Length: 194
Image (tube, rainbow, N blue to C red):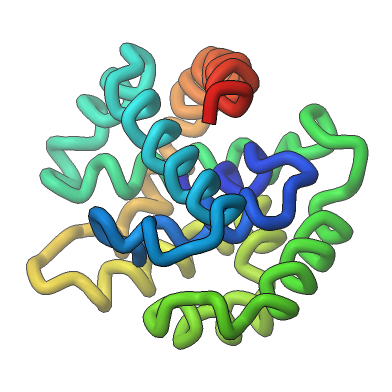
């Protein structure tokens, strides 16, 4: 899952949210350098990624994407799934996506000094360009994937992923609708054990 899903799945725990948000920039045992609440968020992020990567519906999505995006298929799938969460956000949350995004940016901004340097670098752009709310529109997903494509060392094809999303919108939406409730249930269970 991409940023929106990880943040949403953190619930109301702000430290868990911070950890879940920064986890990709925290390698291996670096997790031990963080206070317990943030460390829990990092561990939750890793569990979410592991569950997602092994879910049969997600595998099906990635298989459909692999001919076009090869090793970047999982990245494209994550971004597509964030789009469907954003698009139907009020189905899952009792707040609008713009209000949720604004609250999240405030929480992260208030803990800016706790963010790893890589995250400190991109977070101001994320907040200024309102990445979380922009995911609700295909054009926002297209911009995100074009930006990711520019940062890859190899040809990824991600700059064309918006076209793939539009061409097979219903299929990817159906994949998300099948998968996401399973993920929500899984997270509810593992949060109790972290």
